[in-house]
Length: 335
Image 1 (tube, rainbow, N blue to C red):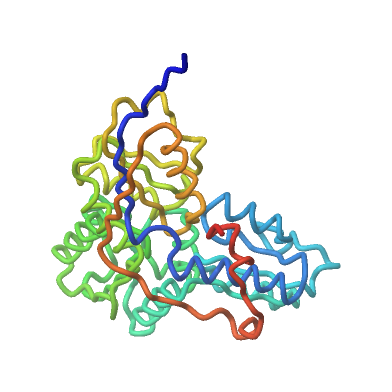
Image 2 (cartoon, rainbow, N blue to C red):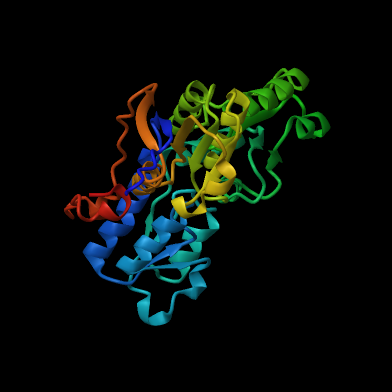
């Protein structure tokens, strides 16, 4: 006699928007199109985006990832090198020019906008305060747009309390694009309280995608026994989503890169699971995680959506006549 074991019921609250933002999508497209246009290898300085699955998928297509330009062998100097979506200090393209390298800049246009805002503060004689995380590639890139000593990094409210500028009346601030909206508001408020003449950037530095993903997680998290965020441990915006889910009321929140990282023995009795993905996490892994739950639960997926994103950033001019097909991007988007 066959005994049928029924699966427990489960609701998956799938957040929308989630996953790739326009800047990440553009950066990956640039590498894919460069491979189609120029052939392998295409070199990429630093991870193109913070996601191991994406990096490995591009490596399989012929991309070679390096940390510094001197790793590119002389025989491949004519091949393109792509700069990551996080942006690079001015010294990097200058180094590429000195080495006669052909480079394609995949810096997110919204990061480039922060660079311009920081440079404007500097041009107008203001000392620049950058709110961000020390050591993050985007922070390194933004600080590297300006002369050494002209930018001060502030990470926390405590940093804002301790900060002692040379000229308190001549300050301007910008922020990393992937920060927690709420945390950053607290830091800015403290700086404005201490330095009333602090000049804000012309437009909000935290990007639309970071804000949108945090807002929908805030809405979806209350009542979730578990909230899963797909993303890499070095992805700032993904880690912020885990924190946002916990603050908004999720019983537990975890960051995973693949379904294989889910600790099924530790999940316990769950009825509602929230699911989102950081801006550099591919949809194919979101689908993988949903299928992993369906194998163990009678899972129903409900979409929790706040806004529809329609942003689209053009790739570099050199690549715009190369056709990009759905098959080219299936490794991250699925079939």
